[in-house]
Length: 402
Image: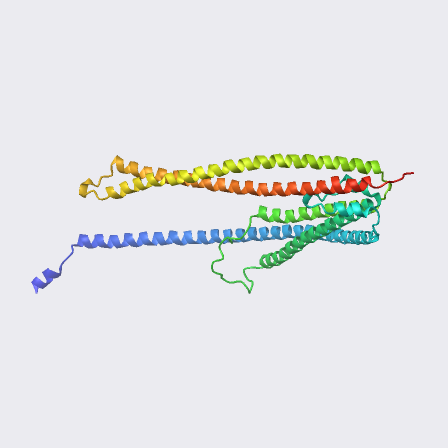
C-alpha cells in the first residue's frame, strides 16, 4: 500500500502552486486579450458603419451629379435636334424650288447642233465644257449651264439633306441612350438599404470592357452636337447659295464668230501642247520600263546565284553533324556557318523584297503607259474633231452680224 501511495505522488507542493499561478496568469492574459478584442470590435463596427454611410452618401451624391450632367446634355441634344429638324425642312423646301426651276429650263435646243454634236464625240477627260463650247451658242450654253448648275446644286442639296439626316440620326440615338441611362441612374439613385428589390449579384464589381471614360463620353456627345451645328450652318449657307443661283439671269445672248474661232484656235493649240507633253512622258515611261525590266532580271539572277552558297553552307552544317563524340564541338567554324546561312537568308529576303517592289513599280509603269497611250488617243480624237471637223465647219459658215 505504501508503495502504491509512493508511486502516485508525482508533484511537489511548490509545483502545484506554480501550476495554479500559471493557470491564473493564462486566464488573466486570455481575458485581457478578449476584452481588448471586444473593444476593438466595437470601435471597428462603429468605424465601418460610419465609413459605409459616408461612402453611400458620396455615391448618392455622385449619382445625383451624374443625373444632372446627363440631363444637361439631354437638353442640349434636344435643342440641337429641334434646330436641325427645322433647318432640314427649310432645305427640303429649297430643293423643291430647285427641281421646279430645273423643269422650267427644258426648252428645245436648235442652234449650232452639228458643231455641238461633233464635240460630243470627244471622250474621256477631253469631254470638257470649255470656252469653245460656251462660244458656239450662247443660248445653248446658258440653258445647259443653268441646268448643269441646278443639277449639281440638287445633288449638293441631296447630300446636305443626307448629312443633316445622318447628324439627326446620331442625335436621336444619343438621346435614346441618354434617356435609358437616366432611367437606370434614377432607379439606382432611389435605391436604399431597405428597398425590396436589392439583392446580391455575382461578378458585378468590375469595369466593363466596352465602357468609356467620362471624357470620351462627353467628347462623343459633344462631337454629335458639333457635327449637328456644322451641318446646320452648312445647310443655312447652302440655302443662301440656292437663293442666289435661282436669282441669276442671262445678261448677254450674243455670240461672235471671231470669238468662236479664237476659242477654237486656242483650244486646239492647248490640246496639241498637252498631247506633245503626254508623248514626252510616254517616252520617258517606256525608257524607265526598259530599265526596270533589266533591274528585275538582275535581281532574279542574283537570287538564283545565292542558291550555290546557301547549299554549300547548309551542306557543311549537315556534314559537320557527323563528327563523333566530343568532336561535335560548337567551334567558331560552326557559329560562322550558322551566321553565314542567316546572312544569305537575310540577303535573299532583302533581294526578294526589292524584287517584289520592282515588279510592283513595273506594273505601275505599265499602267501609266496604258493610261498615257489612252490619253494620247483621246487628244488625237479631240484634235480631229476640233481642228478638222469643226474648223472646216466654221469656215463654211458665213454669219452676218448687226
